[in-house]
Amino acid sequence: MNTELLIEESTITLARALIQRASVTPDDNGCQKIIRDELEKVGFICEQLDFEDVSNLWARYGNQEPLLVFAGHTDVVPTGPLDQWDYPPFSASTDNGLLHGRGASDMKGSIAAMVTASQRFAVNSTKANGSLGFLITSDEEGPAINGTRYALTELQQRSETIKWCIVGEPTSRRRLGDTIKNGRRGSLNGALNIYGIQGHVAYPQSADNPIHRSAPLISELTNYKWDGGNIDFPPTSFQISNISSGTGALNVIPGDIRILFNFRFSPESTVADLQNKVEDICKHHCDHYTTEWHPPSPVYHTPKGILVDTARDVITKVAGIKSNLATDGGTSDGRFIAQTGAEVIELGPVNDTIHSTKERVRIADLTELSKIYEGILNSLLR
Image (cartoon, rainbow, N blue to C red; front, side, top):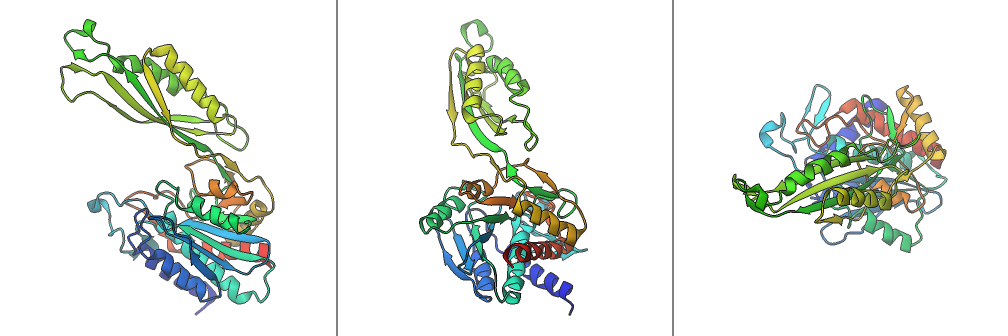
C-alpha cells in the first residue's frame, strides 16, 4: 500500500471512530480515550485535566522548547431533527468520497488528521528540535468555561509555555487550505429590557406599549455604524437574536419586552465603547429600561510571522494554492490560547456544512489536511 493510501486509511478510520461517539457537548463519550490510545502508541505522555462535567486531554511528546500544540474539541452540537439527515448523524457513513456525520468537519475530522500527522512525525523524527502537544476539550461548543480555559490555567502553573498553536476549526471556504484564520473578532452578548404599562388593546391611552417604543430603538441600533474595522478585521456587527414579549393574549398590551443581542467586534471598538453607545441610544428612546451584559470574549490576532508564514508555505507545497488570511466568523478556543502569548492559527476543512443536518467532509481533504499538518511540524520542529 502506498503512502497516500496509508494516510487516508489511518485518518479516515480514526475520524469514523470519533464520529461514531455521540459526544454532544459537554459529553466526550469516550472520544478522548480513543485519541489518547493513538498518541500513546508513539510515545506521547497523556493525562486528563478534567473539571466538573468537562473532559480535557493534555498530551505531550518531548520536553524541549519550543512547544507546538494542536488544539481542538471532541464535543459537537445537537443533531437537530433526525429525519432531516440523509445518513444517521453518528453512523460515520462514507459515500462518493464523502464522510458524513455530526463532527465530520467540526471538528473530529481535523483531530484525526492532527493525530495521524503527529504519529508519522514522531515515528520519523529521531531528534525533534522542540516538543509537540495536544490540548483537546469537550467544552468548546458549550459555555467554554471548564475546557480549554481551565486547562490552560493548569498548564501555566507548571510553566508549560505554548509558542505555536494550530486549532483545527473548519476554516476553509471553497477548497481545503484556501483560508487560514489568524484571529477572531470579540463577542459581546447583552439583554435589553424595556418596561411599559400593561393594558387593554382597545384603550391604548391607559397603557404604554414597550413594543412600539422598541421599534425606533431597534432601527437605530441595527443601522448604527459601530466602526469601520481595519485592514485585518471586518467592521463590528450588531445582531438581535431573540425578542420576547406579551402574555399570549391578543387583546393585551404587554408591560415589557426583552431583546437579546450580540456584538462581534473588531479591535477598533472596545467593550466600554459598545456598552456606552447602547446606553446612549436607549436613553434617547426609553424612559424605563435595564441592560444586562455577559462577560465578553476577547479579540485575538496573530500577525504574519513564523507560524502564519510556515502554514501558508506548506499549504502551497501540498495543495498548490495560496491561502488567504481571515478574522471573521464565530469565536473559538484560540482566543484563550492567544492570551498566553502564543502564536495561534486556525486551519481545517471546508465549513459549508458545519452545524447542519448535511454535515460532511471530503475524504481526500482529510488526507491532504494530515499531510499539511505534518509539513508544518517538519518545518517548525525539525
